Structure formats: structure tokens, C-alpha cells
Image (cartoon, rainbow, N blue to C red):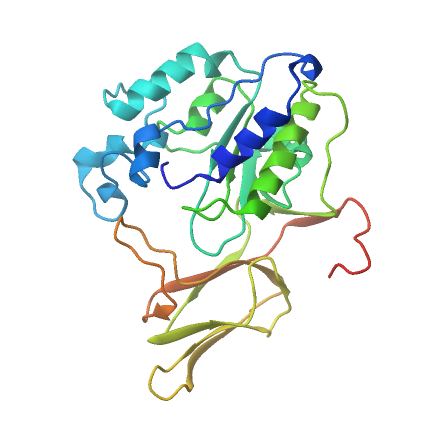
Length: 299
């Protein structure tokens, strides 16, 4: 996807740091899977219209719907790339890592099937989800790999359209962890002090504005909140009075907060919001693991 570019920077750093003499096995990187979409700064090439308006003939522009599938054969630009990559490399792999990246002010996330739980935990993402059922979407990398018996981890490295150094640093560490876990590099995975695990059907609550005005955040993505604590407000553009506010209905993790959750090539992120607009997401963790004591100055 052409606006999901943090993975490119992460791969570049990992690739430059690897000494071939230290690698036991084969590591294959595809930093720019969709070069035309990346250069056009589009999710899909030549159009992403189907993401925000149902136009059936554009479905195959989404590269992550064109991986080989026994139920259908697709002929298009994106499918030509995924078919060659699958036949030449991925179907022979011992593990697949697919680096994506969603937009807005969101945390990054990794996920995998529960049969690969040890692999997922060792990947070392602070926030990850365990899938109980494989994805039902056809032509998706994780579905195709899972059906072929290949362990697969999918990541969403936020945000889009930018190289965000904290996210890139997180991805670099996690790629290294994956190589160590699979025995391609020596050493033990470097896990974060705390890992938050979500089940596939974990509880989450969308923050949906009930008013028009300016969105004012009381928290940041990654913050823990207690039941009843305020997360966000919408204030009047005329009087500055609070027209709507959202308090946490339970103890949870602020996962996404901001107004840039829309789709479309002409979509502009703005803190001016309208009734019915989703402006955030609160998640209730299924499990929390403390791998080591955090430093004294950590919250």
C-alpha cells in the first residue's frame, strides 16, 4: 500500500546492519512491493476509489487482495507482482512478515494466529492481537500464507505518509527479534518491559462525536485510563463551550485518538469534527505481561 512507508525505512536499517556472515539461512526483503502506488502516494494503484465508494471494477487495485487464491484468478498490475513474489519466494518460506501501516493518531499493532502465539510474543511488539480464526478475506497475504501452513505476522506501522522514527525503531527491533527466534541470528529476542495482548474478540469502544466543533484531546494514544476519566471533548467554534465529552466506560488503553480516520485520496486530516464521526478507540486488554521492571522515570 503506497502510503504505508514506515516499513521501507525499517527494512533499510535492518538490511544495512546485517552482516551476511552472521546470518544462518536466507532472509528476503521486499521494501517497496508496490512502486507505482508509493510514488503516486496512493494506497492502491491506479485508484483507491473502492475503499470509500463501492465500485466493483476497482477491487483488484488493492495489492493486498491479489495474493494467489485457489478460488479465483486475477489479472492486473498488482496481481502480477504478488503472483511472482509468491511463486518465487513466499511459498517456500518458513515465516512471513507483512509490514503495513494505518493512518491517524494510532498505536501500531501486530497480530498472528494463535497457533503461532510463541512467535508473536517473541516478535516483541508492545501491543499485539491473537487471532483465533484466520482472516476470511480472499487474496490477503496472511490468508494465503496461513492456508499454506506458513507462520505469518502482520503489522500496522502508524502513521501513514511519514517516516516516524519511534515506529521505525520499534519495527527494526521486532524484525531482529523475529530473525533471532527463527535461528537466523544468534541471541535472544529483546522484549519491551510491558506487552499488551488482545484476543480477537476483545472489548473495544469507538469514540463517536455527537457534536460539531473542535476536537480537544485529554489523552494520547498509549495512555491507560481508569473508568470515568475523560479522554476527549468537542468544543464549540463560536462559544468554546464543551458540547460533547467522552469518559472511559472501563479501565483500558487509548488506542486511537484524532479526527484523521477517513479514507480518500483527497481526505485531509482535521480536528474540526462533525456528529457521527469516529474520533478515537478505547480497547480493553485481554492480558498484560511484564517482562522486566521499567526504569524509575517511566510511567
